[in-house]
Amino acid sequence: MPPRILYLATADARGHLMRAQLLTHALRAAGAQVRVLTTSDEGARFLAGFGIEAPVLSRHYAVQFDTQQNMLRRETDRNVALYMFRPERMLRDVWRLRAHFRDADLVVNDSFHPALLLMGWLPFWRRKVVHVYGASLRHALETNFSGRMPGFVARLFSGIVAWQIDRSLARIEHDFAYGEPRHDGHGRHRLATPVAVVDAAGHCDASQQVAAVYLNPHFQEPALADGLEQGLADAGVPAHLVGEGYAHRAHWHARDEHWIEAAARSAFIVSAPGMAALSIAAVYRKPILLLLTDQPEQAINAGRAAQLGLAHRVVVWRGDARKFARAVAAAAGELLDLPDGEVNASEGRQAAIDRLRRWTGLLSALAETARGS
Image (cartoon, rainbow, N blue to C red; front, side, top):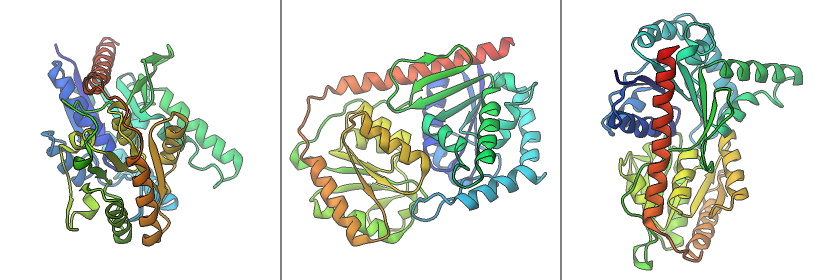
């Protein structure tokens, strides 16, 4: 009997959804039965663009951001508390998930949905739950109250969250810079973030240089888009612009299911420092211009990009479109001036294939383990 997997992908941004569709298609191609759930109507529409039907579990839980992708901590805390402690919200979702658990060998929580954190801690259900998360995201979650609450409260929260996560059948921690798979022998696996497979990629010649821009739906501030567009224009580089929050603007696309192919063939990538964008840059050896706002895990990612020597520049949005445009133009010019290294297109493609194979192999093996427990 093929493995039966339920995949819950939160729709806070789009990285979790992109990973869900990549792994769903790969697992189905390997013979597994995969059902996907998500947490917003917009997320369901995003997945539908990749041929994935994903019913919405709940519309109540979401991390809160402003229109400049700055995380709103108090609003997020309030939203999560209301979700967890109002019976018609999290308990209702747990009740609905019970039926899904009966029909699944393995339940994937990508990433840290509270209902599955609870079910992954409870004795009966935890033997089926695997949490999937970026290394920087777990750190950001566990340190959520550091500096905002008395030290002992922050430490207590961190300890409870870590204990709750670690009670599940398994954890898959991923990062754009991880190499060979690792396992600590206690259910914690480390894998490189999966990336879509592109048939051919490489550097463009001077006449074809295009910046591949992707901004997640939390980016909606008009002045930020003005500054970005002006900065790229001043640098003399045309752009392929994708962002749901700017779909009403000229030359922007709400979605592009083939954006990764465009990124792999671009002069450089422009994105917030999410794990998916950094993984594309690492696998296909593309310079990346990182747009940094106040989002804890992305700040960690940007710092690690520097430590690992990834070809990149960082620009910070501080609310001034003119200054931002100048910073973007300067950073874009520096990325365009980087020496063209020798890039073997087949190496990037093979690296992406290897990453996906490791994920599908591990999830299939975990489903077999859960079925036998």
